[in-house]
Amino acid sequence: MKLKGLPVEERLKFYNEAMKIRREKGWGWRQIAERLSISPATVSSWLYQSKKPKPLKKRFGFENSFYGKHHTTETKEKISKASKGRRCSKDFCRRHSEHQRKRWQNSDYRKKRVADLKGEGNPFYGKHHTEETKRKISEHHRGKRYSPQTEFQNLWKIPKYRKLFIEAQKNRKDNILNIVKNTHKRPTVPERKLIEIIEKHKLPYRYTGNGSFWIENLNPDFVECNGHKIALEVFGSYWHSPMLNPKVDERMTFHRRKQVFKKYGWKCVIFWDDEVLSKRAEQIVLGRLESIGRR
Image 1: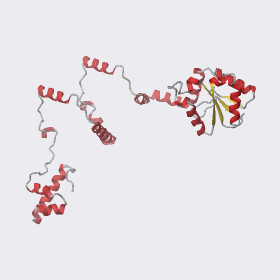
Image 2 (image 1 turned 60 degrees about the horizontal axis):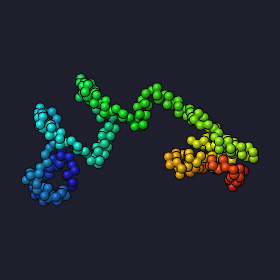
Image 3 (image 1 turned 45 degrees about the horizontal axis):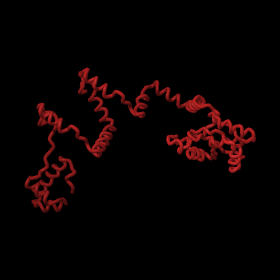
Image 4 (image 1 turned 90 degrees about the vertical axis):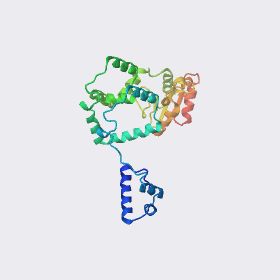
């Protein structure tokens, strides 16, 4: 039996029961240890009361040994110097955080803590910061911002903002379409060149780069008109190539767009701007479309 992990009250109760059995049965300490499956040394120490469990002392109010006393200024300075720069271990912080989180999930504990900090129960009740303290607090927080997630949570508590956000989500597709129309001149020069080739050879493709057609969150430049799921994309070398621009958004790369289109059963054919604007543009476009059998 492991007594070390038991609370002091439980160990004291166990000790009293063991001593009662010894007096009634007339057993020795070896017999008690054998029947309780504990160390004989533990029972021996109990018999001679050298390690008798002591009950917990109350630490609050009149029962506290330091009740009504105060540390001297010198002692306070020593405590302050000894504690300055000390940090709790990461493991302790994690365990303490988990413990507090579990306690806070208890509705009774939460209500009690909130009630204790209201009105006169608040340790700062009736007090005010000095102008010097206010200035220090202001300087400490100047230039700092909440994380995006915290800012969103704070704004979400405001009914007016919450209503605007919900309305914006309902019209999200229209908003994206307006952004595309207002921020980009469509069609671009390479796209106009591809439109000329499509019209010249009467290819079954229509221009959708103006935001008229979407696949998930992506807007293909051209789609096939005869019911086949084929999308044509005109890529700029700088804006779509990670080799030339390491900061390019992953959504703009060929592999990402091909992955999204494939999820919905679409084929994706890429034409680079230098190909479409070259002298061999028609030959390249017709040859690539013929290779997939959709010329």
